[in-house]
Length: 248
Image (tube, rainbow, N blue to C red):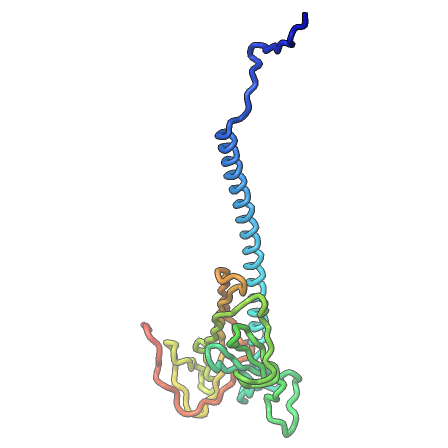
């Protein structure tokens, strides 16, 4: 007699699959973990990108600041300068965003040529486009064709550039003994008409720039420099009254 095959089931070997609820819970947990990993890497990449961008902006603005510092310290240099002759070279802050300056570039004063010569005229300014420009061979803060960008317009937008000249230290070399001719100092002594003074000048510079691709990345720099070449000035008229305060 033929017998049907029998299925033998061993105790404790019962097999069951995952239910739909268990699968959905597992998938949800997996998605949460994956989202966390993606968010972590996205934040890390953005942080690294911002750090690199900040470093680039900072480096560009510091390079421009160093150029301005080195150039402006040379203003007023004159190979034939003497302590009793007014120096035709120097600097002038036209407005807080533009400074013009000059210095003797070739150690010569040609006969019949007024100096500073055009090639000895320079300047720095903040342009309307948010760049710092350098002028070589001109004395115009606005439209001169020789203005050239020195900051990277593809990287940085400069929002603010300010020049300021604090009161210079001043020595009246015509007085005997010599005295202080800075009206803002407590030991100031008014000069007389025709007196000759020697002034030690300073220039303060501040600038604020931001990354062109990210307005949140902002760099602020400030510097103060001493002009190397002292300014000789023949005073016209009598000196003003003292402007010093808090003098004991």
